[in-house]
Image (cartoon, rainbow, N blue to C red):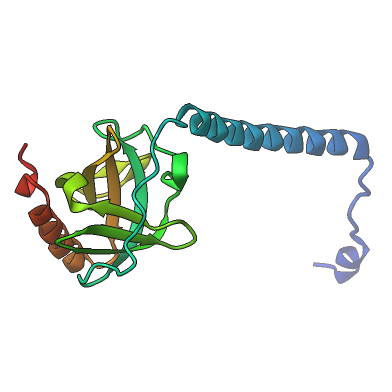
Length: 183
């Protein structure tokens, strides 16, 4: 192999700047339209849900139960795990901590308002496998069914530690009027 041939090799100059610039602009416009469509859809859903009442204000003293770190998945209309409630920032997924005692359930969300579910509003606690376009293994999601005003909703929570997940679900089910999820 001759080294002088390798030294002489150079890239061909780019001569088609026009088509490349047009394709770049087309891709940027398509991405921009997609982002605008997602934002418009979220705003439309928020407008349609104006009648959804705000959750109760969290208590000044958090419940005495042991905190469980995990992920707040979403709040959806009960029975329709894809109908996310976006009013009052209930549709925003994120890190959270769950605490409960005889008074109710407090989900403290990072960067979002805390969610307080008084015990008298809690209807059912069960394990599920998915909610709001998020899928988990069987029993990997704690679903709390509760009354938000006159609306029945499901709130999903997933604990980081599998053992704490099971114990938290068991403890929460004792707070519901129908322990174990039986209606």
